[in-house]
Each structure stands twice: as structure tokens, then as C-alpha cells.
Image (tube, rainbow, N blue to C red):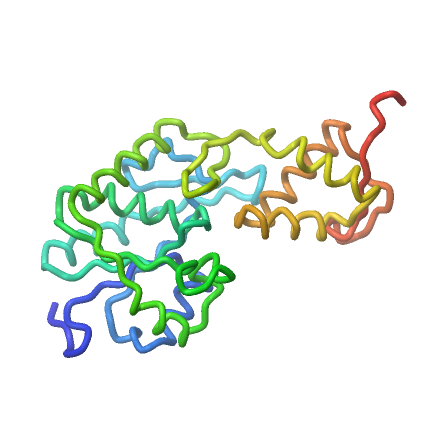
Length: 253
């Protein structure tokens, strides 16, 4: 596993999708890249010690199993061969931050330091690596943090707590991971609808997603759940569900 000059023996760790696409178009494309196709903010962590995450069928409408064994096997091999492990993360986007915690847990007994880059340190608008261009990746690379063995273990301990709680959802508030249930957002969703009188589901999910930096699919599910519970109602249906208009339900009616 020989590296090339300039970025010798570097393995880039990142979420798949938009984040990895930008990375693979950057000057780091010649480095080893391990991209994780998983949503740790919403996945069931029951089997995570076997590197298996199941995404909730009630949100994604199909059974999705994220088997991370191949990625972890590669990562450990690179670590054993003294590669520099560099993680592209974020302080505010749950999936990116949780990936950092997970990798620290996997490697805490393998390496003495990990390099991490936080997209929001480039600029606040870049809440996750997925919002960045390949050129911005190159600029962010100058703001490296080297996690010590102690810091790696501390982040691993946070991961172990998240894993133990295994809640429905995980968000990040003020830099701290918070495990919450599906009903956590109920009052906020209802209050927002009542304040605006009525709103399209797509606009409501946009407002919530940009505040919490989690997938709009999750908020579509949470809104559907409130409709099923009779706490909000559809007042203008559309063939495309997210274009339907909802309003609050008067509890006195």
C-alpha cells in the first residue's frame, strides 16, 4: 500500500453521496477514499458492533441494511499500515459528526491520532461536507485538527453512550449529541403550523431540515405521523404528498 508524494499514505474517510463526490473531484482524489453509505442519525444501532445498521422502514418505505464491514475492514488495514486517517466531518450535521464518533470507536485501540476537518469551520453555511465544492475541500484541508489518543477515546465514549441509548433519532445541539424519540419535534412542528395558519409540507420540512441538518425524509415521516395521530390535518391535498397543505387541529372542535 504505497502512497504518492504530496499526500503519502493518507486515507480519506467521508459519508457517501454528495460529500464523497466532491472529495473525489478534488486534488485528494488520488488518495485512498473510504465512503460510508449510512445514516447514523436515524439508523438502528442494535447490531452496530457487527458493523450493521438498519434504517427504519417506516421512514424509507423499504428495508435498507447498511453493512459497513467492508469499509471498516479497509480502514483497519490502512491503520495497521500506518496511513494517516483523515475524517471529513462537521460540528453541526448529525450524520457527519456521528461518523467521526463511530470511526473513533472503531480505531481507538489501533492508532494514536486521527486528523479531522470540520466543514462548518470553513464557513458556517457549509454545515456538512456535502454542501462543499471540490475547491472548498482543498481550502478546508488547511484547517486540520489532530485528535490525540485521549480525545479519540473521549469521542469513542460518547459513541458508546449513543449506541447504548439507541434512540429513534439523534441530533446535535450546541455541539452535543442528543438522543431523542420521534415525538421530540411534535410541539415545534405544530406550533410552526399554527403560527403560519397553514403551510405546504415541503416548506415545513425545509424549515426544519435547515435548522437541525437532518434529512427532510425524516421530517416528512414525522409530519405524516402527526396527521395519522389527528394532531394536524391536510386541508389541500396534492398527488405529490409533500406539496399538500396542512394546518393545525383545534383541540376544542
